[in-house]
Image (cartoon, rainbow, N blue to C red; front, top):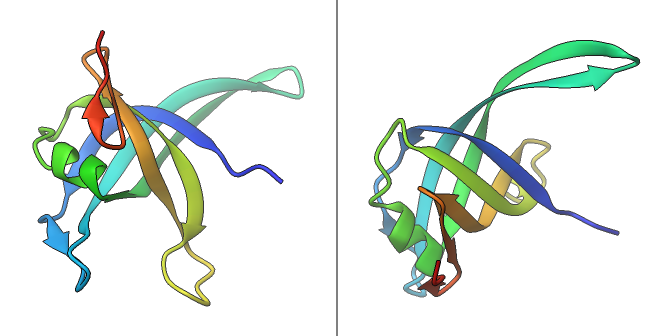
Length: 109
């Protein structure tokens, strides 16, 4: 099975960077998305906000993203916490200003 999400939008909220007891950086944020898709031959306007979770090196890099910044995120969906039905996008990489950032380093571009 596949679990891959790619969304673009605007960063609308960002929590304070925190660390787990194991010392792993964690950062919560929200992404506002607007687009149009064709469904059953008709255009459909799509607007929503989604929760994001950055973990590790991606979190420390995302901490400096300004609110209102256009960003594209790649990642996967997971429950907010165990036994939860609510989902959050775990971001594994993101692109802003055309510059990708993956895991531990900023890609050459």
